[in-house]
Amino acid sequence: MLFFKIVPQNCVGLVETLGKYSNTRSSGLQFKLPLLQAIRIVPLALQPLKLQGYSVITKDNADISATVTLNFHVTDPQKYMYENTDSVESMKQLVRGHLRDIIGRMELNEALGSTSQINADLAEAIGDLTNTYGINVDRINIDELKPSQAIQSAMDTQLKADRERVAAISQAEGDARSIALRTKANNDALIATAKANAAATETAADAEAYRIEKVQSALNDADGRYFNNQSIDAFKSLAQSPANLIIADKESMPTTGQAATLAKLLKQQSEQGDQKAQNQK
Image (cartoon, rainbow, N blue to C red):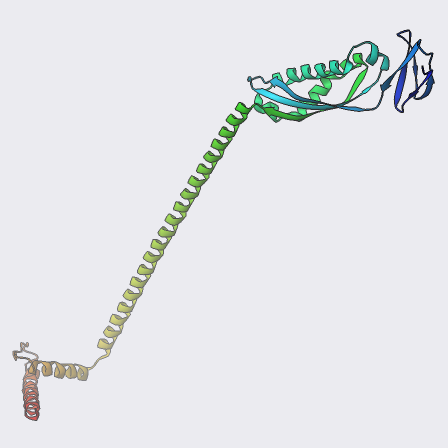
């Protein structure tokens, strides 16, 4: 039987004499009495622990699978070894119980979006309670909160419906905007056409007024020779027409006689011109 035992680095050795704790030894080479004493090794280093697939129920009766990761270390080797048959398992149960209580006060959507708050509440809840097991939890973290398959399928269906609804609203708003823009463009085109037509009409009216003004001004400045020339042109047209009747007032009778003679001469010249044209044929 060996009369010594090596205690590893960052560990302590609990010496038991005849099955009863007697003292604690530090790391290194430690001697013992064979058959009478035993040295139990307790690690003091930080240890990771993962609690996976733990089922909890939310306030609205949704089943969630939770995965928790924590880091702990032994603070009191005697409590850790002798005051609890399995301090690590007791710590697991403590964490699970408080996690159930915290999430049980939340709705599903609130729980899924509040992992940071759950971490803080859980760390505060288990705080000093693990000291009774000779353990301190240095860090605790919710790695995953996963709804059950049925709830996840319902959430996916709702999410898809919400996305389709948003897409339909966006499409309707886009169509309405497009119709509004087309209507505005058509109205603008009609207004522009109406303005162009009005401007063209105004320009034509101004041109006609200008022409009438110029003709009136010319008539005001015309003398007797102009009117005699106009009379000759008129009688020339009269001579070429079948009707030779002239109606005139008393003041214009002398002039009318001259006009009649002139009309006769013009008619003769016209007839001679027509006869000459037929002979040439």
